[in-house]
Image (cartoon, rainbow over all chains, first blue to last red; front, side, top):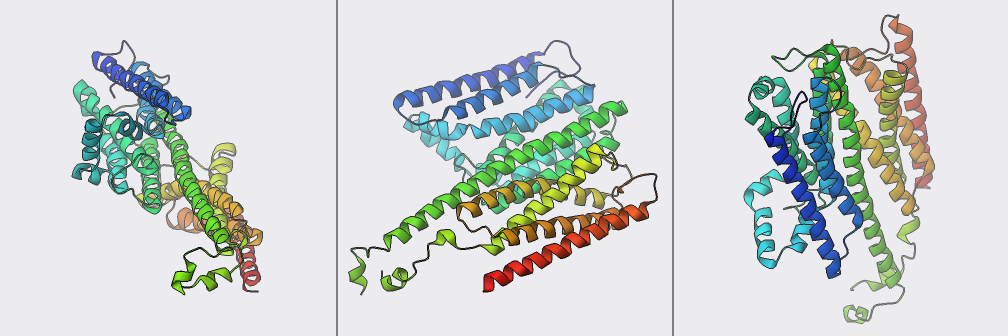
Length: 275
Length: 162
C-alpha cells in the first residue's frame, strides 16, 4: 500500500491504493450478501472483520498518524503489514470467492491456488522469511533511504509489506483452503520465529537507526517500541487463532470418540460378520 | 469388527481419564509465559528497572531474548487453550499443572538470570546498584520455584501410577 510521508495531501498513488482497498471491501460485502440471499451460512462477524481491515488500510494510506516522521511511518507499517492483514484473513476471502464465483472462475482460482508458486509461498517458513526478512532488508540496508528519494520504490516497499503480511497471516491462520494445509507445529514455529526476529529488529532499531538516516532519538525509540509492542499484540492474536483451531479440532475428535464409545454399547449389525 | 468383544469390555469413557502429562505441559507453557510477562510488565514497565534495550547487548543475547519474548506470548495463549481442552476432557490434574507452572516459571527465570543476564550479558536486573543481592535473590527464587515444581510433578506422577 502506498502512503504519503511527512504530512500534506495524499498523493495519486495513495488515492489509488485507497480506492483499491475500498473496492475490495465493497466487493466482499456484496458477495457475502449474495451468498446469504442464496441461503448460505456466512457469519456477519466475517463481514465485520473485512470491513474493519479495509478501514484500517484506507486510514493508513490517507491519514498521517501523530508523532515524529519515523513513528508515523511505523504506525502505518503496523497497520498495513500486521493489523489489516490479520483482519482480512479472519474474514476468509478465498473461501468466499470459491463459493461466490461461477464454476469457470472457481476452476481458475483453484488452478492458481494449486499452482507451484503458490505452493512454495504457502510454506510457513517461506512466508515468515518474506515478511520479516523484508523488514530487515528495509531497515538494515540503504533501501530505506533509497526508497525515501524515489516514490515508486517506496510504493513498492509498502506493497510488499502489505502483501507479505497478508501471506504470512493467511499461512499462519490457515483459515482459507491453502495448498497442502501446513500443520499446527510448523505454523507455530514460523510464528515464534517471525515474532522473535521482529522483536530483535525492533530492539536494534531502538539503538541504531536505518543506515543513512538522521532521526531524532525520541522519534526512533518511540517507533521501535511501537514496532515491538504492536508486534506482540498481533502475535498474541495469531497465536489465539492457532489455539482456537487446535481446541476446536480436539473437541470434534472427542465428540467422534464419544459417539464411537456410545455405539459399542449396542453391537453393530455388522459385528456378526467378523466372528 | 473382528474384535467386538474387546471394545465392548472397555467401559471407561475416554472423557474422565486423568491426563497428568498433558496437565503438566499446559502448566509449563503457562509458567514460561508468566515469567516472561512478569519480566516485561513488572520490571520493564512498572519498576523501570530493566531498560527496553541497554545498547550493550551482543547479538546472541538479543536473539535469545527475542525468541523467548515471542515464545512467552505464544506459550501462555496455547497453554490456556490446553487447559480448556483438558477441562473439556475432564482430565485436568491440578497438582501436575501447578508443578508444571512452577517448573516453567523457575526454569525460565533461572535461564534468564544465568545464561541471558550473565553469560550473554543481556540487560541486567537493575542499573547503578550493587547487582549481587539482586542476582542472588533472582536466581535463588528461580531454584526454589523449580524445586517445588519438580516435587509436585513427581508427586503427580506417583498418583497416576497408583
